[in-house]
Image (cartoon, rainbow, N blue to C red):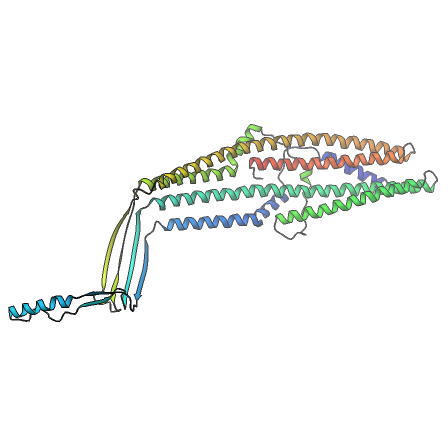
Length: 458
């Protein structure tokens, strides 16, 4: 009996001491879970795959800077269709015969056939190797720059997801610790009530108390059992959620770092410093900044398309003719190309304006995001301050409830208090313990929220 009471009061004293807060110490267990979550989380894997996709887009844009060489053989068979008819023989043969008669020699042919040729070539091949190289092309240059800026934006987005995942894992872990506190509180409350039931049974057997004191104590035990079952269910659910975030089996045991509830964090930085840190470190701003640079590059791209010409060189070499003989069929063609759109119905001017509007919209989004981040830091800062003040209040409540229960417990054992008074003060003590447990976890959660707002990596 005395050993049970001593252990119970020791637990209450430890709970009160747990409310003291100093500078936060790193938790190897929680840090390990965060790193495991960053390595295994499916959402981060999707972001990594998206980065790989953008990297390949950059490789494709870079490939346009190199010359293009292609081997293009073709072979044609044709039958029927339109024909080219020209009476060359009928026109030249009589004239050539007359010339031969006048000169007295057969210097001119007199059997030239008329032309009767299919327009679609039959048994014709064109086996060639083509080459093309862009000497100056604004589309290629600026598209490559845009893809690089989009890659930086995508990498920043991944870091945004990482920051959010750190907060989510930490919060889920704190909630799991809180469910363990709830189970312990209910178990100790049940121990106190079970001891009360045994005491009442002795009092009844000695004709000092009536039987309803025993049944009332047992009824209170049944209520605590019901609450304990709910707390155990919450514990299993919280553990499953932590494992879900870590992408592992939902029933895997979760290690407990009890130092997290004994040494609570507090904010030592000023609000202005935290806001400046957030503006420098939040990856949402980096993502929007890179997207803004990509939009500005798109403006330069459209301006260049409107005023700058594109220049390229190319050529082809191979064999062309009827039948695959390759005899006297070789040819070489060199080309220099120039493209300059002089007028397209003001389409390019509209594209420039559209790109500028997009840039202005991105600039507005960036400014709005900066304001939102400053507001998030303010809210998180004062939420942590309020949670810390609430913790101090609940710590005082636990001390007072503990002292009151000790007094009523002593009075009840000496027959100076009623059972209903004992149960009321015991319920007040239970409520104070829960409020203190929730306040401790709330401080941890609010500190994690402030770290998320400031983009502090644990």
